[in-house]
Every structure is written in C-alpha cells, then in structure tokens.
Length: 604
Image 1 (cartoon, rainbow, N blue to C red):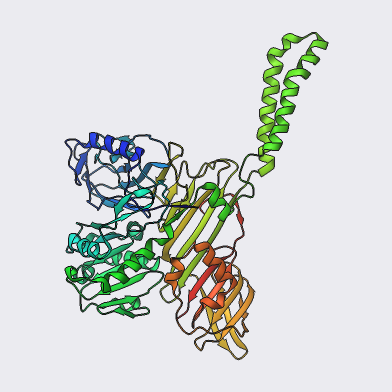
Image 2: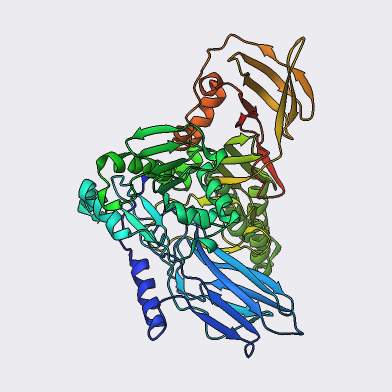
C-alpha cells in the first residue's frame, strides 16, 4: 500500500504543463474573463474561484452563459482543457458540459474536475458544434497537478480550507503557524506547507449550490452574517457536505445553527462548540477575532479538519486495490494456456506446414497457408481469452449508508469496482451527486490513460475509465435526497418492520427507544415481518459516525456487518443488504458480485 502525502512538490509533467500554460497566458488576464461569440449573440462569463494545488475531491469552474439572439436557439459546449499538452500519465483530456439556450435565455453551469490532473491549458467553447476562437480563458488547472502520483515514505495531512471573503486568511494562517509551525519536513527531506488556506472572492449569495464543489476542501470557514446570506441551495449543499464528512466552521458569537443541524451538541473547550450532523462536523467558534485564536481553539479545529481528509491519505495501485477489494479472481494474462497455443501455432506454421506442402509438392502454397494459419491462431487466442473470462464483466460495490429518515436524506461512502473482458463502449454513468475518486496508484513516468468526463445529462465518465482486462477501482461518496425507509411499529405480538428500502435485507438489527434490540433474518423488499427480541448489549449514547467516516471504509463495513450491536443506539437500525439501493449501477450489462453493504438508519 502506498501513502500519498499532500506535499506541494512539482513533477516533471506538472512543470512542463506550467511552462506551456505560462506561454499561453502571456498578455492575457490572470483572472476571470468574459467573451462573446457569434458576433455578440453568445456571451460567456467565467466566475473567479480559488485555484491551488489540492489532492482530493472535485474542483469547480463556474460559468454564466447568455444568448442575446431574439430569434435563434443555440447549443453551447464549454470544455477544458482547450489544448491538451499530452504529457502522458493518468489525466483528464476533456471535461465538458453542453446547454441549449432559447432566444434570450441564460444558464449557469459548473465544470467539475475529478481528482485527476488536467495536462493542458485553457477553457474552450463550441457553439452549435463549431469550435470558437479565441478560448474563453488561457489558464492552467492546479487541482491535483503537483502532488498526484508522487510517492513519499511518510504521511502528512495539512488541512485545505476554504475561507469566506470577510475573513483574513493571512491572520488565520499566522495564528496556525505560530502554534503548529509554518512548514513540515516529510520523508526524504521535503519541506512542505503545513496548511493551505484558500480565500474566495465570491459573495455568499452566489456560493455553489452543488455539494461536490466543496469536496476538495477539508473545511469551510464562514462568518455568521455571511452564512445568513447564503442561498437556500448553498445551505443545502453545505449541509450535504457536512453529512458526507466535511467540516464547517462558523466564526462569531451569538450564532445558532438551524434546528436540524443541532445534533450532539458538545462544548469542546471554552468558546468552541461542536455539532455532529451526519458523518461530518459543525464547529462554532465564539472568538471572532482570529488573531486571538490559541491552541485551545486550534487543536479541536485541526483534528476535525484532519479527519475530513483522512480517507484519502492512503492510495493503492491497480494490483493492491484488487487484492484489497477483489473484482476479478485472477489479475494477469493466462500464461500457461497462451504458451500452449503458441507452441501449437509454431509447430503448425513451421514443421507441419512444410512437411505437408512438401509431400504435396505445393510449397508455393506457403504464400497463403502461412497467413491463413496466422489468422486462425489469432482467432484462437482471442477465443481462448473470451472463453476463459466470458463476455460479461463484473461489478462489485461495498458501501456504508447513513439514512436519516427524519430528513429523507442518505449519505454514502465506500468502494466500487469494475472489470470487463472487453472495453465497454458507453463508459460509466454516475449521478451528479456522487464523488468518484479513481484508484490509479502512485505513478511516476509517462504510463497511464487519458480520460473524459461529460456533465450534460449526468456524470458520464467516458473514454479511458474502464479498459479491457484491467480492474477499475473507485472510492465513492454520495449525498442526496432519499425516500427509502423502514417503518417500525409496536404491536401486541412485538415489533414489526415494513421493508421500504427497495432491496431484500439479509439481516436487520434494530434498537427501540427504550434500548431493547430486535433482529430479523431475510426481510424481502416490500414485505412486513415481525422482529425477534434479542439480548444484545445496550448502547445509550449516539454512535460516533465521524469515526466511521475517518476509518478505512471497507474494514468498518465488515465490522458493522459482524457486530451491528456495537454501532447501535436507540431509534436506530443496521440493515445488511447484498446490494446498496443508494449507489447507482454505473456500468450496465455486468454481473454484480454480491458483497454485503450496510444501511445505518435513523428513525423518527
């Protein structure tokens, strides 16, 4: 297993990309810009966002588009990069989205860059299928550009924090550095920044309303006044971000969270209050003068921020990922069978062919028998591979879902993997609420594949993500509305449950309001069954779902399957299911490898 440190150290490829981008940006504006196309009919404005090297999550690039034509409908595609430098390695060669604008119409869209580097520069525009010139922006893309794939012997996890405009990131950074130091020395003597603070210039009214736009940050810091100005969509996005493991820090006295955010209130220290909605943290710091923050304030903040980035501290290459989460039994070429085929081929095309044609006195026929035997041999090799593995690929998923039935919301974390004997033509289709992190290993050199992403209808991971005979593993997070539920009812004969999850339940463990536990085995989807009273140990306190998030998800899922009583508290249940209803099947036409997933449910 390889440990990746968040060290701001460039690679040869990153340096080359920077040189190309610098040449492209000579004479161009460094900030956001507007451009018009089709003689002023199409107006596109890019919105300035913080841009620096971050390791995980999605980077957001927002745009506003207007069609000034009074008669014509136009289709506009925005994509990055405008030019691919082609330096090799696992990278993104295209991230795009297409919108159709009626006369006088306008739209906002955000290109979201998954955690793979973009080896290129510029933002390109196509109108009605035709590429436009000049590019909308000439710029490089810093997200995961300098650290991705660099291998170090030690683990360093400096926090990456988004800071709202009224806050002074320099003052916050100075107090942090005073306590923890400004740099950290990693293995092999690399000196790196101890934290990364990115200050946004966007007004709170136009903060992102998609939770994926916050996933590259371990924390978000905001003032109460700015929080009150957030749009409803931005508040929902931030709540989803917290539910899925993020940390929100609100700085200022006299602020109370929304009612449904006040979960497990804890006074951590003087002036710092903690809440634990979902798998994340909400911290309220009452000392609004950040220059006065001392160790008593920074220590719990640093711990919360560190836990938000902890799942991405460990990385795996293809073989390591398949050993940890197997989606194909044997990873490699069937050498023995192919060796036998090659021996038969060599014997037939050489000695046997010459002997037979010599006896027939038709050696001139070698001009066509050699190609014919070669063609048959190629067909045999191809057929052998297909017969050895079949025509159908494999999908395997193991996730933990926190289902809050009181809010109709589900947060999911885990792994999914795909294997196909042939390269699938349609790629992968995830929802626009799913964070997908490819496990492509620590890479140095030029090996790897270019990949494409299209956000027009969903999150379409097109070319390069799944190739023939190579397992593709992903860490996944998802936060979305969910109507699935289990309905419990007390009757004269005991406690009953109606399965509204949409999938069969292998085993259900439930704790009622009094602390008594019940179980049921094999609960079919849509059916009502009576639970059996058990003598399992009682847990009175709410489970630390933050600890679940900061752990190794696969190991924790197995522990929850084996010992569900250790994770229960009153009015909660754990359902073990062979297939999660909360993560979409991204690759069609595959057989699903049955692996136990967990639904951790909170009941009204």
